[in-house]
Length: 504
Image 1 (cartoon, helix red, strand yellow):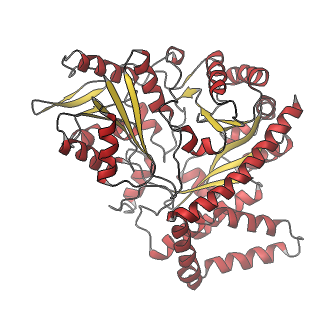
Image 2: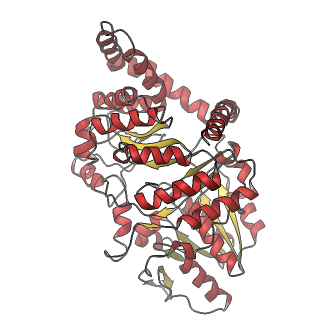
Image 3: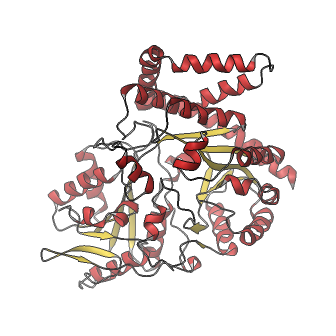
């Protein structure tokens, strides 16, 4: 029996190669361990109906398993219909964040047979066993579906408490060399599941509600287990120069991270990057452990540089002092500080957007990721947008394309310009802030005023946004820019690798 996973991953440029998604790799691993065959259709560029069906026919699978987010669900509806129109006997199941939060909506789609709510490893394994034995699968925990015209809804089984019991994620179903990290000689891992925080723009707390409130939502693999996986994967990809971790907060548990730091330093000896909260990075003992372990870039959620938006709207409870302290400690220990930022938030005017740019410059962030806020239902910020009548029916499939909120044309042009040229603006303010103190306030005020002129927004900003979109969607230009970026990143990674070897 064979399961083919289908992963819509269309959130990048015309040269985007996709990323390694641990969820699908974990599902594939547990199925293969039990003797089932698996494959992956990883869609990273727009695909025609004929091309998609050609790839589906080539797989000759018994089950087609989609994984999707809210933005990708439109593709899943279309593609599952294409599959069913050609062969109605094919079994289609959909899992992921969106089906977990909105199983009724997904189950109502005629071309979708089953919905997986929550963690899918053992639900999909039970389904494969039932299909192989030609047995009924309507009582399998986690699954919703239709049987004789009626919808069945099964509660999820308990969360997997011991992640060490799972086999290592199956990377063989991905075309590694085509992935973004593969092009840069990188590998990504995940040592934990779950986040303890309840940020109002994130669906994390809504996913937790699917399970018993007393369930252990945050779970870490043992240090021995994650180190063993890294070592085994490095044997397959010996040219790896850099590794990364997808975990929300890698050093969430200090005792765990202390042991991880020791083993990583002794057994892996490669530079890595990871996600953290700024308040953790404001603690010198944590930063020192990260440096000793080989961390050379940490990414923190700054989100907004405006204090009201950051702490009242987004409820980050993060002062500027903490962010400055995190930035200073990273500099002291030779760790690059990167930031996640959002624009297009409710209660955010253009001045507040510029505050985000400016704070990145002031804390001297080395790298900046900027996205346009998307209102996810079942989140606190979605309800705020609803109260302010900002919600629309606009379809937005990624975080850089546009805003889904009902902003004025002027505001939409401005926030898109800031998103597209975020790093340029940050670097400009960095330059201003190193000017002599007598010139600095004047230069900042002049630049602020230029950016705020309506005519400039409707002319220069609008043209710049059009140009950015054209470059992003042109394969030749996107490939050229991507090659330039890769060359720069490889030099930086080589530098990190050399400096790490020198530390030891």
